Image 1 (cartoon, helix red, strand yellow):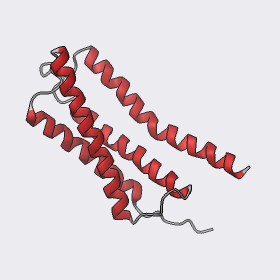
Image 2 (cartoon, helix red, strand yellow; image 1 turned 90 degrees about the horizontal axis):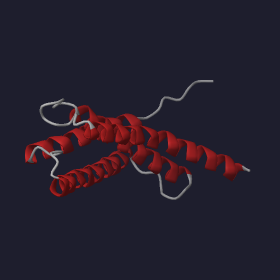
Image 3 (cartoon, helix red, strand yellow; image 1 turned 135 degrees about the vertical axis):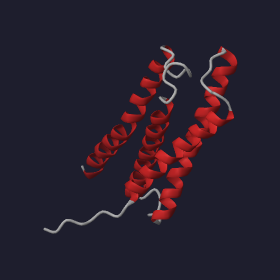
Length: 146
């Protein structure tokens, strides 16, 4: 019985963590469809998208590490190593994302990337959002007095 209750809480935690990422992805597709990322439409729109995207990926990575720790799949990691692992996950997703934009630009002739400066800024925004989220998610919790 206990395992089933844990499984439901595990599924709910993952669903809650993945939801913002899924919503962001749908928004991203909407923005692409209507050309809102183009330099003459809303040039700053990708900044909050990358900041929030980095934070949402950090949340998914933190949830994965937390659930793996509770399931005894991995040892409890020191805070600094947990933050580093989360930032690493955010960096990997950011790199894959920028490669995907590059491939779309090459094969569809779109203009998702504005060059190397835009790509580096996007990766910085991903990491900034992910780092802030990682630090906030891993901060020690105060125990409530009962």
